[in-house]
Image (cartoon, rainbow, N blue to C red; front, side, top):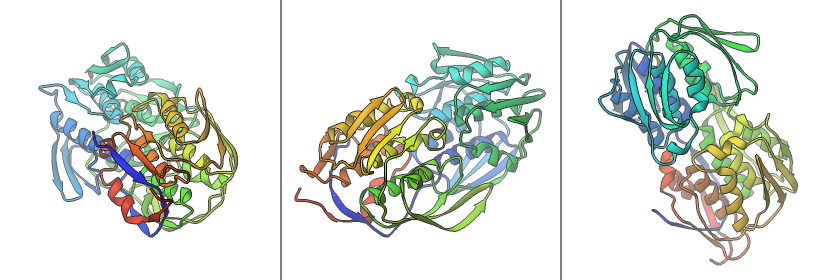
Length: 432
């Protein structure tokens, strides 16, 4: 355990570069392992989750070389592993690999750490089983024993929940199914898979409200460049908002299915600029500059959540700074993340003085409320820990020091988070 004491700060200033996108890194590595030949992934994220994906792919027969910030993966010859495939803390790794293996003539046992072993997997095992894969689980939870088949059948499937992981898992299986798999989302989730797969030679198209994935094709190697992770940028956007500062975050992915948090803050009154817009390998990116703004409370519902699912804890924190009442609903999916994030956000912000009420799928928050220092826990969840770190910087009532019980989990997605944050901090608030 790595305990951290954080003193409140006056402001942030300057500019930051955030780590490569985690979702895109996962997908690029898995697609490359399925392709025949060597693919190049530039600016890969070497956080623990994405390293879990690389290690898992190695155990399945992919040849992987790392050179600086880039990864070179030779795929197309995957095979059943000699031992269990360890997915660490990464639900993305487990769910996407399950879909990949389901459509291949191989089998594997997918295992994870204590946290991952508590996350629901029936959401992928049910549609994959309907396609012809044989999957055993522990009552719908990991570990998963997957026996794939080269004779999967196409299905027509309407997703009951908005989940990019479930969508991608089905799409990967569909690539090796006979016929055309039809997939429909009630509420759109992040679409990195649909943007990237055509660069690897996959064939699919829109048919009304359905995405039609053509099976039977072979993926080809590709060169992919990964932009900065918007979910990581969101922490620095939040820091600027909470400390009434001007800050620029460079080379951030601006995929519209990921930037719901920025749109939500815009509705609340945030002023910001985007410059140096560019487009690479299907993904838009640019530089975001956050300006000093006065925010007002707003309502956010289930339609808003998928495009900012990872940022809802930050939205709750920002709501403590906004004038009036903010209502966040439809975020029940947060209860089955690395921890119960609804309970985690509520209990810890309450300790810090927030006027917050817990709802089944979100929060009711009244602001503005000056936060105070406290001893808090991050529940081993990287996003909760980083959110609490920003809350600690914005403390405006004594005591001015916040102690977080264990911050080591930030390595999962943002190994250099505290180092990056320290570089942009200006001054101390109060007399801690």
